[in-house]
Length: 221
Image (cartoon, rainbow, N blue to C red; front, side, top):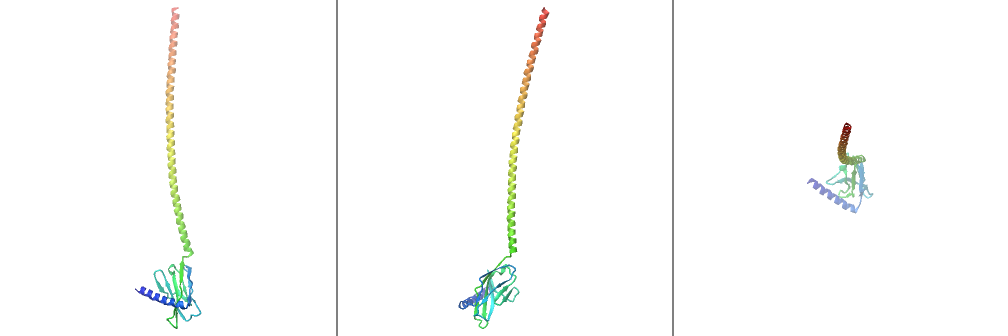
């Protein structure tokens, strides 16, 4: 409730101030400023020569909240009308408005168009993030390469096994065929031996008969 009330009051204040700005532009600011974290920044608020004896205040609008800056703190300080912010961090990003109130007539108020402050990460942090992403990408590539090598190795092993199996089958068939040939040759050799033996026996029988016939002839004579 208090935040809503403060927002209404601040919105009313800015509306009145902007209406005054249309009549007389006393304050001006740059549109946008980029800064790195852990640094200091000065948001300038330029005053025209027609405006003087003003009391300066600064307001900041962020994504979900807004407030008036206390310029007596170590983080925020005034350098004339300009705002000095020290030790920047990411949460300091926002739209900063410079407002001026006349010391003679408090009803006379002015407000500038506002400056958008964008706080960026330092180069070291960005380099770390880049290196981290590169490491993740390299790790992913390495993992894919290892998996691919494993798959290729398994495929090659399967092909070698198939070739070895095929070679073993071929050798087995050759050995079996050689054994069959040897058996055939062995049987053929036995038959040849048997035939030769038979012929020898026939020859011996014939010789024996021939000798016996000669002996009979000699005896008859």
